Every structure is written in C-alpha cells, then in structure tokens.
Length: 122
Image 1 (cartoon, rainbow, N blue to C red):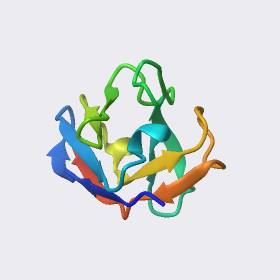
Image 2 (image 1 turned 30 degrees about the vertical axis):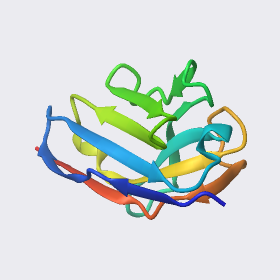
Image 3 (image 1 turned 120 degrees about the vertical axis):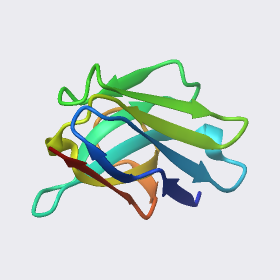
C-alpha cells in the first residue's frame, strides 16, 4: 500500500493560514482519490476534503468550504491542503489518506498518514 507522510502543521493565530503537505511513496499515487481528515481530542475523526484521481473534482465539508483548498500534483506524488482564515475549531490532528472512492466517507481508505498537529489560538 502507498505510504503517506504529512508535514506543515503548527501553531497559528485565528485568521492565519497554514499549508499542509502529504508526500506519497510508490508508483500508484495517481490511482487513489486523496482525502484529508481531522480529529480533535475527544471527538471522532471527521472528513475535511477530497480530490479525485485527476485533480478535476473536489469536495469539502461545510465547516471548511470557502476557507480550505485541496490540490494534488501527480507528477510529484503530493497532495496539499491550503487552510486560510483559520478558526480555533480547526484545531486537530490532520491526516492524509489514500482512498479507493471519491466522497466524504472513510470506509474506502486504503492508507493513512501519521498525522500533523494544527493548533489555532485566539
């Protein structure tokens, strides 16, 4: 299975921005839908964004729509999440995932990254 490594997390103030990156190993990156999920302490892991295999279609949770942008570069085996106008409720561990279907469910996830912490202070 594809191996994923996230980077770019950190501490920012409300209204700030961060860009998360996920690097994939192997030769099969373009065969996967790529997702971002997040999990706050004491809460369930929740869907954030997804991008299809070609990068032409994207979907977002209502809570981040208009603020976050997911993108991918199949030539470099990377997927990114640009996060703007961050809010304290965005604080969570963010996980990159390689998925077998396009949507907001995690039932088709084949591989998970280790996660990167995003903390938004006010």
